[in-house]
Amino acid sequence: MIEDIQAAIPLGLLLSFMIGPVFFVLLETGATKGFRAGVCFDIGVIIADIVFLVIAYFSSYQLLENLSNEPGLFVFGGMILLVYGIYLFAKKAKKKTAARPSKGGYVALFIKGFLLNFINIGVLAFWLGLIIVVGPSLENDPERMLVFFSTVILVYFGTDLMKILLAKQLKRYLTIERIVLITKGLGIVLIICGIVLITKGFLPKEKFDIKQEIERIS
Image (cartoon, rainbow, N blue to C red):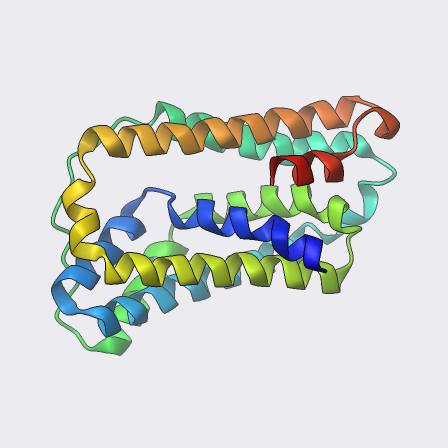
């Protein structure tokens, strides 16, 4: 269990710095409406992630059960990560807009965070690919997967709390050039992970242990 938690921490940190609409609205909310408002917005975002994660897990359950007998299915998860990584790497920078949250209360901010994340189907694709990547290394054990992904979400949320506290400072340093570098860096990481998974699908298990590779990266 300790090894699963240790492997999940870097992933949670990585997810927290995925650049997108949610990232900027979170900073805007924290900077203009305060810490509590930012937390309410972020809880909505996290709940949407949990919903997507549950959907991805149950929709990929049969795939996970078959991965030990059909390692070629790793190609499926690898392709999802590869395509998403290429999308991030090739994505053109857009000017930051002052995406101010509506003047509603905390409930409105919660709903806004949930919907803003939930309408992004790419989030579901990402969780689906990630589950297919990580599942076999966790022996498809529901308890281990619960510990792993709970840790990811908690680290993700904890890092978001730090972002909210430092919202004004972070906004000042997030220039277009730096946003491009961060986005392309994340894209490269996902491309590498996708290639690793696709390669796994074509190699015998004894020549390539996905668990060892994930632990080495972590």
